Amino acid sequence: MKIEAENLSSAHSLEALKDQVAKDLLKKLEDYANPKIGQRLLAQKMNISERTLSRLINLENRPTYQTLLKIYRVIFDSTNDAYILEVCPQIVEKEIRKHNPTIIEDGVNYSDDIESEIIHDRVFCEIYFLAVTSPLSRELVQYRYGLHGMETLEKMCEMRALKLNNEGLYIQGSLSPNLSASTLKRVGLNLTQKFSKPLNTQVGGENLIGFYADGLDEKTYDEWLKIDERAFREKVRLSNEAGAKGEIRAFTFMVTDTMSEK
Image (cartoon, rainbow, N blue to C red; front, side, top):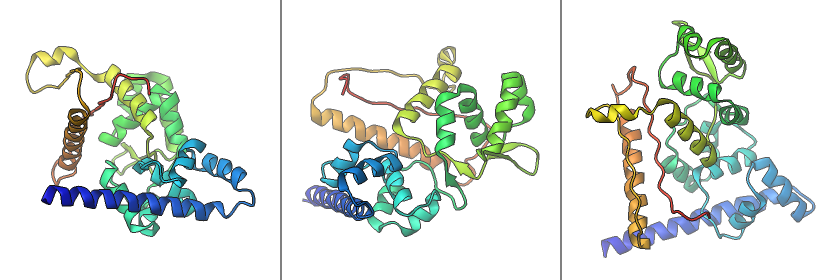
């Protein structure tokens, strides 16, 4: 009975979230004289598809934390995600905090431009994640990426993606990307291609590379997803504990999906 009660509560929370988002979207659409044109313009402004927007309004989809941030940045006309969490409905705030692996800090604003550079410029992507995982020196950038790396570094500072700390090292700047699922896939593949070291799997404790595929029923596949989500969140939790930060630049990239095209 306890499990049934928990599942019921979860279902009610999901429906309440969908209701709240649909209500807020419909309220925002009142800003437009023509609802059909307004929906197209609002979808463009929020950087989501018209189809997704329509499904959210019709209570058909559960919005991801990334979609929620895109929606409420437009509703509250702010790119400061810390501010968004302060002013958005409580149920929306809880959903974002529950699923967003990034700790949203005061004074860090969101930037579409940084995400675009991460997608289209491999060197920008690598330098960005090298710097946000541990303070980065100019010498390392020059050694690994040469003149293009140095020019990219200057560009990143101009975009406020990175900044210099008191020791003259590069760290995360005042603007930050909140990466979409497609960008996360691109980043994960890029960093895996660049930094994963198959030879190191021959010695325990160096890294982990694993792969498994099978035919599953729906219940087992759902359990797979839950196991992976728990493991991912445990990694994030551990990395944010006191004393956990260090000089080892590490990444984890997790994908579980079906082998169908949609």
